[in-house]
Amino acid sequence: MDRFFRRNVAAAATASEDAPAPPPPPPPPKVHYGVPALACCLAADPVQGTIAIGTESGHIKLFGRRGSELLLPAISPAPVRHLAFITNRGLLLAVHERAVLRLWSLRGARPTLAATPVLPAVDSLEVSVATLVPRSSIVLLGTSDGRVFACDGAGGRTSGPHAGLRGEAVRRSPADQPHLPA
Image: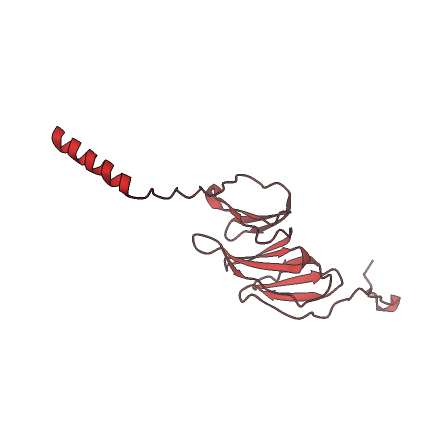
């Protein structure tokens, strides 16, 4: 038995001198626990029990059931301004600064970038509000100049601007005001 052991060790030593060294193992994935620094927006999906937090650095942190946490990569360094879950579809719409939209698919083992919807090219377009239309996959995006765009979260498409205030105030005459009973 001792002779067998010595012979196999000697054969392995000569074979390893001739073979190239194996490549080093890949670095472990980045681990991050807790709420990220510079958090600036939040969205919750009560059906899936998921919370998303957007950061100034462009990252999105997801908190799920049973203490699971995941940090989505920052595709662009633009800050995340608004987040909206597309309920019961496993989708998350992130609105970054300068109207950059990212649609993330949260289905499967790893979240993936499902689409990058594009708003019409308008100079200095800034999305100031984003809200999900109840019981649909439509997210309405309001801009600082009064226009409203619709983004279909299921298909990743956006519409042209809908009628909005376009920066003008709506005025009613006193006769048009509703009368409330005293």
